[in-house]
Length: 75
Figure (tube, rainbow, N blue to C red):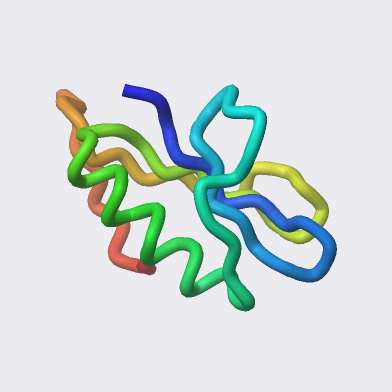
């Protein structure tokens, strides 16, 4: 399944499926976008890729068949 990316866009935060031309949904805060992307990733057994305001990847969380499951508890 494609990964879900949380990316900044014109003052908003978007959840965007990897390689998709359009965003799945827009949010006012990054926290809201991460929560939504996490739910999608759990259902799709994929990964959430979180980008910072500069667009660079700052974190990843896997919810798929990862042989080394994440121990990240930040979100």
